[in-house]
Image (tube, rainbow, N blue to C red):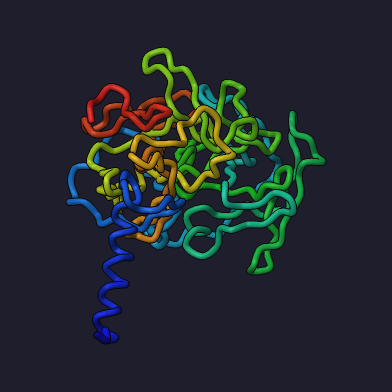
Length: 327
């Protein structure tokens, strides 16, 4: 009997949906590295906690356009080094305002990836009159030409910015925002305190916490969390919109860029370390099919301020299990 075009289409569609919705934890689906299975779970309380970051929210997917245009960037003048109790040495401009770097920029060769609404929230620091003050290597200062033709200051190749919500000398409201913005140390590296250098860490690894035991951390040494209202089988997310400003997703991390992470998963096919194609278009790393996040309230490596927030957010173990909560 001949099969009509419509019938054939329905059969193909059904097979595709079955493969996508069963790949994590299925006995029949083929192994895959990326799953597009995430219908958004019912919206609910995603937890709230004082972040210590003022009213800052990271520029990232969905965050653009939330700020009014910032005033034109003032000149940098003579840069100086200030000491922050939590972050250690921090680079500031002549007015004492903290300078920041953006993880999505490139240092070699220098390139800024913050334009438009991003640049309103994070005004680029002009390179025109910037000069090194005490404790700063003059050879680390440089410039990069932005898309609008202006020259932006760079520190060891990293474009420098201010944060629009830093209004007083010494403010660090931009630290850790969106999991991509960090105060600059005088060397051009991230000011994170404790001597921790993000460049020394894999994309995902583990550390021993005195209270929580072995937990997962990201490339910046920040604690990684899971949301108990998310679902791994099949993968669904209940953290969308404003939730993502407090709980930035972990972008995909190559399996070879991990250390100590259980890559097999607990499903029948052992396929757990996969990329989640979220309904909002953001790609998110998972461990054992559990979507993973950082917390905007963790300002430096070792912080675990997100632990237990709202009774739904918990640090995650290398096998994807929550610390201090039952699944």
